[in-house]
Image 1 (tube, chains in turn green, cyan):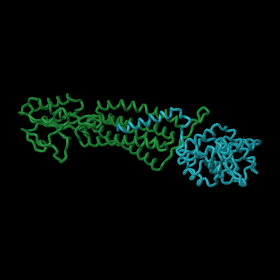
Image 2 (cartoon, helix red, strand yellow):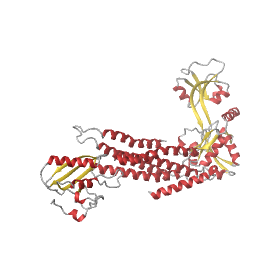
Image 3 (cartoon, chains in turn green, cyan):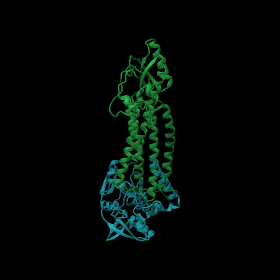
Image 4 (cartoon, chains in turn red, yellow):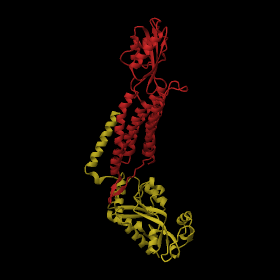
Length: 307
Length: 241
């Protein structure tokens, strides 16, 4: 009973955080928060991801303790209309009933999280998944106990908690790296978002642009970024900057704010740390393909000068 | 992830099929096979004295729960091997599967309930205050002198309610109000007051996780009428010297 209560409290965290963060993140910038409140989503994602990981770890440890101490779960009868009915039979429909809403809610939230680019909602959907997985583990456990396997419930819980721990770990990791201004990635953290390269490509097509470098960071549900542009000549700087910003914002609604800077040359700003793999923090127009950045290492190592 | 889910689906399917294959009567099973071992053989029953539920008279084991266990053993065609001891010692042996059943006037709020299998309560008794039917009932419990047997928790409960407990050695010798179990008060022909001092739900204990065994015992206890248990209680009280 206490376990169930603790689990319920944990699974309330992601939806609560989602509701708070999505309100707060829409507030206008103030003197105190000049960049606005978008990072509330990122902070919320960290909390939701940590709650998910905590839930998984809690279930895992509890299950392992039960297995280690060989706890034999006792399930007796309850009297219904004068018959002593084994409680296990009643637990099955109850568990099934508790699993169903979470299945549908979780499935409905995942595509929404994708199109809203809302990672808190994504973590919340994963918490729904954790809820129904736990119920399924309970069903398997009760059936196993009925068949005389005392370890069935704890073993099923342990298996399922691994999946929950994995989801919790992924969400926590993605939220931390996003707070560290990692380049934009998809909400589930599985792949790079190609927006920086596409934007650099698009800006390069402008007649007055000689070279471009773009960097974008994810503030939770919207992107902020900078474009460093080397113009072919120095005419109409204000108009050109405005044009670049307008193009950028038309490309993707998630790109909330782009700061365009006109520079005489592109200074080398990339990290040249050893082992720096595919994760390029910035995208140059001529580097970008349709694919996420796969940069020619030899060329990257050598400092490049703007023509 | 895929592999795990696959195994899980299979297990779930297999378990469901087994359940549906007319196995309903065979579910639940005992991990340690207590029911199968006891049926037609020997039942190891721990008994700790707690009159009127369990009591020892000149080497004879009597009491309400003793009588119930004898009937249960008859149903199973089993012999009873009685083991006497303190409640703690017996329950510890039960937890480690060295006994099959323990009776000791246990109630469902025993601190052992997370470590053992307890039956659902087969009878609920209440500790009440009984007054002689002839005299008019007192208006309130506060300030009332009530006879209580020595060492009975009822004395503390009476004090909480503002009554004055008067400790006596033998309750049946008391002439005024007494605090005792509801069935005893009725058996004495006294009138009960509405104030309830405590409620006790009586259970028996089985080893942890032996679910078939527990369910079999509960199916024996559950059709038992409250009236029958009360009849046994009165019979025990009358048999007292």
